[in-house]
Each structure stands twice: as C-alpha cells, then as structure tokens.
Amino acid sequence: MNATVIGAGLAGCEAAWQLAQRGASVTLMEMKPQKMTPAHHSLGFAELVCSNSLRSDQLENAVGLLKEELRRCGSLVLCCADQTRVEAGGALAVDREGFSKAVTSAIRNHPNITVVEGEVTAIPDGEVVIASGPLTSNALSQAIAGLFPENSYLNFFDAAAPIVTFESVDMDHAWFASRYDKGTADYINCALSKEEYLALWKELCAAEEADVHGFEDKRVFEGCMPVEVMARRGVQTLSFGPLKPKGLPDPKTGREPYAVVQLRRDNAQGTLYNLVGFQTHLKWGEQKRVFSMIPALRNAEYVRYGVMHRNTYLDSPRLLDRYYRVRGNERISFAGQITGVEGYVESTASGFLTGVELARRLRGQEPLDFPRETAIGALAQYVSNEGVTDFQPMNINFGIMPPLDHKVKGKRNKNAELSQRSLALIDALKERL
Image (cartoon, rainbow, N blue to C red):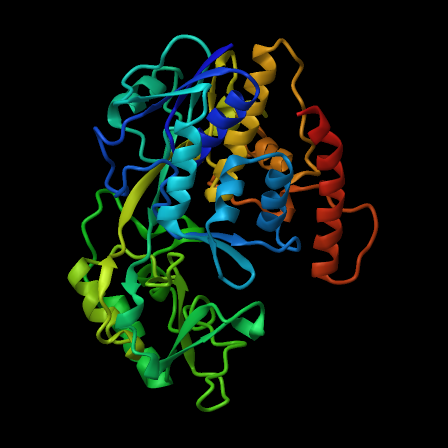
C-alpha cells in the first residue's frame, strides 16, 4: 500500500496522516525550503499564510460543525489546532508558529511517512494526491494542465492582513472585549469617531496599491476581500462590515463608537495581533500611512504587512468526483484549495476525505460515502456537482446541505438541529473509518 502526497499544507498533511494511520506507506513531497512561494514565510508544514483564525467554533455555524465532524473522525489538523489554540471568543484561533510546529512534528515522526523535499515538476506514477495549494509552481501547474484536454484552471485573488506587536498598540484608545461579552475578552477594540472613520475611508479609497498582475476588483474572493476594495463599495460598507461597533461599548463612555477596528491575538504569548478584516494589497508604505490613522495604531510596529497573491483552482465540477478523484483517471486525487474549497477547515476536510478514501481503495474496500447531510459530504458533493455552472471557491455553509423535514423557529435553532442530524450520522460512520 503505497501513495504519494504532493504538498505539505493543511490538506496534504491531513491526507498523508489519514493514509499513514491506515497502514499505507506515504511519500510526502514538499518543495519548501528549496523553493518558496510569495505568500510563505516559514519552513514548517501547514503554514497559515492568511489569518490565524479557523473561524467559528459554534455548532450553530456550518464551519463549527465541520470542525466537530473532523474532530470526531480523528483529524490531525484539528487535534493540533485544539492543542495550540489562543483565546478568540467563539472562534478557534491558533498560535500560528505553534500550530505549524505541532503538525510538522506529527508528520515527520510518523513511521509510515517519508518526507521528500524539492519541487515536483511531473506527476509521479502510482496513487497520487495533489495538494499543492493555490500557489502551485509553474512546472507542476503545467503537468496538471496536461491531465486535461481543455483549459480547466481558474483563479482569483486572495489577501492577508497585517500583524502588529501588542506593545506598540496605544491602549488609551483601545480596550479588551468580545462582542456582546461572548466568551472571554480576547479582542483589542480600537475606537473610531465618525470624523476619524470618514478620514480613514477616504484615504483607503485613494491609497496606492501594489502591482498585482491581472488584478481586478471583481476577481477577488468575497470571503477575503482587501479592505480598500471593500471601502470602494460605499462609505458605510466597512462600518456595517468588519468595523461594525455593535456589541462593543467603549468602557470609558458606555456607548458604542461610530466604528471599531478589532485586533485578534496571533500567538499564544499575546505579543502579536492581526488586524481583523484588514487584508490588503496596498503598498507597504501606504499601509503604514493609512492604518496609522486609527488612533490606537498611530505608533504601531508591523511585523508583517498585508500581502496579496493569486489563488489558482480547478474547474472541479467538470473534473473531479465526490471523492476528489480525477474522473477517468482515478489514481490521481486532488485536495485543498486547488479543488475550489475555500478556507483552512474546508481544505482540511478535503484532505481528510481524500486520504480516507484512497486508503480504502488501496485495501480493496468500497468507498465510505459521507452523505450530503454531513458537512464533509456536502462540501465534497458541491465541488463535484456537474450542475454547478459558474464555479466559484466555496466555504462550507448550511445552504449546500439538505433542509430539515420539519419547521424550526429561529435560525440558530434550525442550524443547531442540522448539526445534531449531521453529528449523529458522523458517529454512525466513524466506526467504519
């Protein structure tokens, strides 16, 4: 039972782990450190290049359900995330470096996994999982393109937010709190008056952007939109979006400010914080100038400025089946963002399912179908649904899962019942994993 996994990101590590745990001999091929991408900075596996948040951890939220399904199924990534979590209210956020170290250690120390460093320029023989990510190298991209008779690659642009040091935040203009006191007070909240907000909005709209070849606002993924692109949509877009003050009264006045910029802890020590919702592709000097208009960040020290990069993915509904295998060439599977799933947890889920199903195939077993009533199954079936004509990257959401067969009052109650239904199915399935 031999398999090759290309790429040691979240999806690749999860796929390799699931295969290895089921007795397969896995060769994990990773081009770092010999070759880096514009978005990567560390040498470790499962590097989080954008936010350090894996989003909501509540079962009334679809991504919270997806996390719980993966936990119950023995996900390596979720195990490491829980071990390295930092407080973030109702979200699961992790110490960026600690998380990567935990995944890297688990992978490198597994007796059934052999890590081979260096760029992959051709698709190997045998059973292969390609989890090379949205920044797949040019050589491997050409090899992948050769699998398909027509041009089946798509792309959009993705952005990451800046990170500042805690000691450089002026707490005279900020306070710790979580929205509506939900959970512990884990976010730094930076207040803006109406005048300060309008001045910030004006400069965001006018600030100079870095050159990104082929960039257009309409080709930005909605879930990771640069703050300056969002600002151009209207003067109130930010104040009703990432800068909304609802549930965040200023303890000095007892009133909600006009707008609030939130900072989320980026490491376990609490020495680094990222600007929530401030993913950007402004020039670095412009980021410093414009973001310094936020009173609490006038003297902020930036350890990383925001960056933007192209994300490439497959036209998966035309190419992949519900197990993320290439239709007509099932020895090759894909996993992660290259399939068009969007988000850390979604990438992990695709790697999990790919690893589990490939291990079963290597053993001569029938596939273990995750139904559409589960988040894992719903995501896989959306990505492989040939009826989807205008395919776009997709976060998990309850909208791609079958509705309940009865009425439930209230959205949270309905979502909670959808989660209960899913987890009952997962508990029945996991005995066969």
